Length: 392
Image 1 (cartoon, helix red, strand yellow):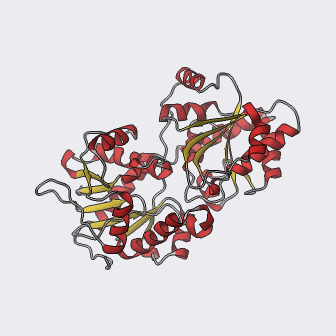
Image 2: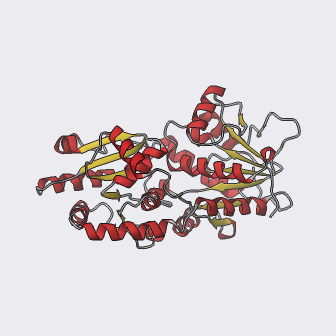
Image 3: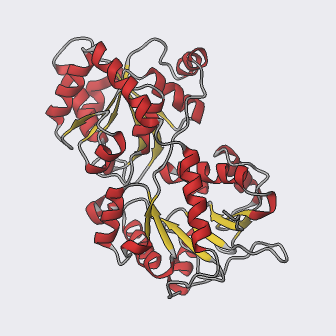
């Protein structure tokens, strides 16, 4: 397969809350950098100062040797100009350098140009849970789907379920959709290091149920919190509930003051953690709980499995697809059902061990290297020489 020159939008890494799209972007770009010759991969983002770009890109794990071109407008103006006006055009600040393919890993989609266009659409959550987004968020996601339908030579998404939803809620046809599952890497944090990292978070030797994600309504954190409150009311030795991740859309009110007071010190909010600490959290979790109302893929489920955590997650079609039936599936939003399942599994060491072992095998089927190889194949398929879909 021939290599092509590729430019990737990494603006998601500059968000205060890059979330799962940020993790996807960072991992794909990092592995692409190992595959591409030095001169064939460029990154771009909205207008930021050089220090901010270097700091955020570096924190994501992306090699700082990769050039990052800053566009002339700040993020909100740039997105509106791209989507409504089809400009400004991409400029990379190097005479003679231009991409064969541009990849938009989110719905922030640059104008068409003399290059192929790949767009990753992770989900259509805005159509299922519009109230979980603010007005600008709803407008951005819906406009992005419309622009993707006009501009993208190829739209990639992480699951078969997401592909069906995209076809049902956009004008993107099946022949321009490709499923490329996200991936995970094996644990790189050893047991002793993990113990130390958990100690730094105040979790030394303490059993806990773990949740990881962006705090927003569709992630179902309210259900999990209330289930843990229910377990506490039933008596017995109830573990901690540890919440890790970024602030997200409309997070205020996800945990009521009454529930927060009832959990007291059993609720531990560690916030944003680096990747080694995240692996340590997964490795030490008695149970990983993922009560989302909707997902396009559900990457934390696989990350937890790769690190040996038994997984309980919502009974969503996409999580059945990703987990391969190696997780305990619970009715979405049903607090009593979640409390029952968590209580039963906390009391069953053997079942948790079996889930953890099966989960590791399932996660091993999703290496990031396969994701990047398939993504590179997509680039080759849309490089110049193929007709553009039309529309600016």
